[in-house]
Length: 226
Image (cartoon, rainbow, N blue to C red; front, side, top):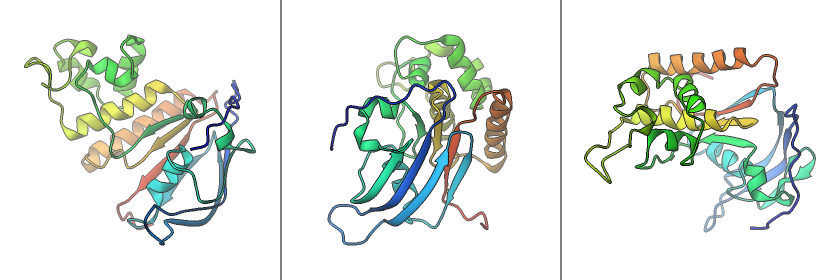
């Protein structure tokens, strides 16, 4: 993969725009194109849902955006510049992503949320509450210091699939990047919990009305009649 060297703009207004310009992509070992001649623009301050049938390339679109892959044809631009020209880690700092195949570690809950051993506890608690994990957090014997899973000791706490997804969402909220990407984050939730999660996201947005709103890229795989 080509390694760029440009630094991304540190914009206080988070004025970022992404453009897919005639992008096509296919996986190695196949002649079938997963995405073909895709062109679209979006910016911070908007919300975008990607809706389509299974295997229509929705997750691939997200992975191209995050530069986990590079397209065989076309160009992806950030503020008019090919994203391949940016330093990779700086470019990734613009995105908070919840993929379907996320992983939690057998480490303290707070470290799982922050992605590091040292973190802001208040910010971690707020992110968990916004992700709908607040009531479960109150039952954790050591709070944010509670170790998840029993890989390294019997005192570890097991979490359900839906609880793990809430922690993953809290991880994205904690990072607080300009772009928030949700790749079917509520698959393990019942309809009521799912509605509550999205309401919480709306509440978060309402609290930030005086700031540019982050983009929501949500991949919908189930049939909502759209």
